[in-house]
Length: 420
Image 1 (cartoon, rainbow, N blue to C red):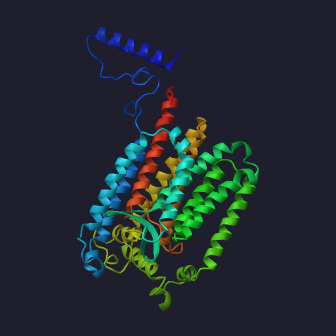
Image 2 (cartoon, one colour):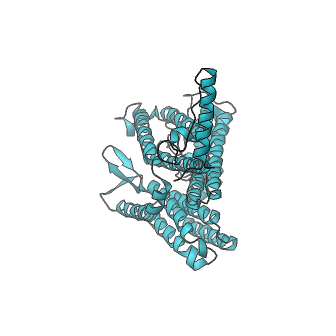
Image 3 (cartoon, helix red, strand yellow):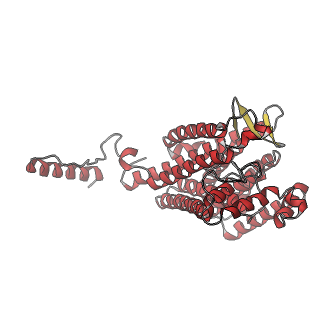
């Protein structure tokens, strides 16, 4: 008996009981015949509520902390023309745009993303090339990473993370039969990642390249690439990043500053941000100095509202606040990986790899940002996902979470006996 017929019989049975009792049951029975045949609506199935609320919690806390970390910035001569709510209002505007984009993204079936993956990858390459063109790309702190869109700026590397994620998942599905052969399975994907990496290093943006490389590696591993092949690729990547650092004087200085940030040379140079981040976290102790009470954000800690937002959280909310942030990101990553495994169990390999790829992205980038803020890793310019100030980053974070919610929705449709 089909699920629709069974639901119809149950509905009739409940209806008969209701008439016999002379009252209407307060139950909304569902039938597969409602709406499009075999496909219940999202309102019936619902989305992963906990994933939504954890995301909302991180976004809300991030909005509050962006305001707290940036409220004193207009006192700096560089930001004299800014109001005290300048960064708050812009961040809120990007959040609204991100929510709209997420709602639209949720309506897109995963089959469409699978068909569009190669074209989206090509589009991201075009944007990465365009941003390097003088007078087209916007230069900030010596790096050409942004497009100016009127009063807003967009960072194409954020789109590149998403497009590489989709492309890698689609690639592994297409190459599933030859995944044991290096030159036919892995080498073309390596060339694609190297091409993106070369464009990102020209900006330069080594942090984004690291995230993209880890996303691609993670999807290759989860897609079933031979373990020996995987470790060979990992060794090559580690060697490549080591060589980049060794051949770059300012990257070497960051490593030396990380190893000893308290010397006079480093504390006033490449170790300045790290040393003040550690001071901020140290001041917070267990329970923090209270919301708004940070001293380091008063022109001592550079980029307190972006890359070093966790340091301000540590100062104002203490160890308890930092542990809460870590716990939220751990749960977020764990839930995304679970949704991905569920999709793969339903023979939806592309959707499963995409969901797990987003989990790798969120988990790895938050790990790097937290490690930098806590002095466990060398200083790297990566924002804290969903929380730090950064319009295009927040926008793409919300779009990718909407994709994961779509995967979860389609999983539920199939488990209810519906059709996609």
